[in-house]
Each structure stands twice: as C-alpha cells, then as structure tokens.
Image (cartoon, rainbow, N blue to C red; front, side):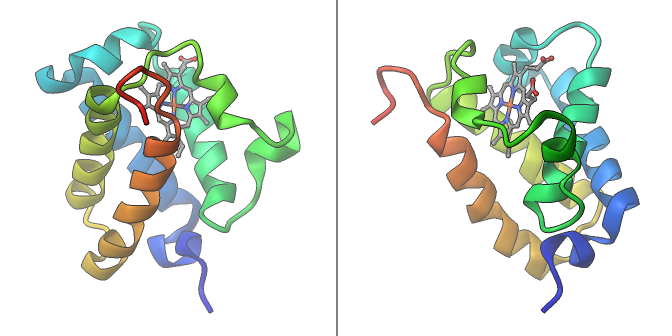
Length: 128
Ligand code: HEM
C-alpha cells in the first residue's frame, strides 16, 4: 500500500502544498483571523508544517526526529480556535490541494483527515 506521502508525490509535492497553503493564508482576505495569529514572517511556519506533514502523511518523520512527537493540541492552546478558525485553516488546505492539483481521489481521502485534525484542535467555548 502506498502512503499518502508517496501518492502525493513525495518531498517536493508536500513542500509545494505547504508553500501554497501559506501563500493562501497570507493573501486571502477571508482567512485574515488566522493569518493574524501567525508571525509576519511565515518561513518558520512553512518549515514546521512541511516537516510535520511529512511524517503525518506516512513519509520521513522529520518533525519528530528534530523535536520529538508534538502534542498538537497543546501547541495550539495559544491560539483561540473555534469553528471559524478551523474552517479558515481548512479552506486554505482544501484550496491548496486543489490549486497544486493533488489527485482528485486523494483530495477526497485527505479532506476528512485534515478536517478531523483541525476539529480536534478546537479549544474555544463553541468547541464541543
Ligand atoms: C484549526 C486551525 C489552526 C490554526 C488557527 C493554527 C494556527 C497555528 C499557529 C498560529 C501556529 C504558530 C505558528 C508560528 O509559530 O509562526 C501553528 C503552528 C503549527 N501548526 Fe497549526 N493551526 C491550525 C491547525 C493545524 C493543523 C490541522 C495542523 C496539522 C495537521 C497544524 C500543525 C501545526 C504545526 C506542526 C505547527 C508548528 C508547531 C511548532 O511550533 O513546532 N495546525 N498553528
């Protein structure tokens, strides 16, 4: 069975996806709330998410090798994540997958996986 990482196209493809994801976050007015939570310079966020997704999608566990296994929920407690913020994040990820032309069937498989990951990070009163 091929991993999601392999089916995406490996390192270059994951990097391209993450880069486009942050380009969208940086420019789409409708995701301004979550953009404002990030630093002005997104280069570190790009690197972290690339390294994290690499392992999370079944490829080399770059993030865990450097920093250990992340507790994503804990790492996101500084950010007030409600439904609005979750949906802004997912909007960028779904659109990034479309724009970089991830295979349609693979997009269909990955969308609910990203949804669950983002939904699990909700920590606002509208959360559960
Ligand atoms: C649900 C909405 C989300 C919001 C609003 C959000 C926001 C943020 C913010 C503000 C940071 C700090 C960035 C920085 O230091 O410049 C961050 C870091 C990070 N996020 Fe998210 N995030 C969300 C969902 C996710 C999801 C679904 C994943 C994984 C699938 C993820 C993975 C990461 C990783 C790996 C980091 C780096 C952590 C570190 O500092 O080592 N995030 N996020």
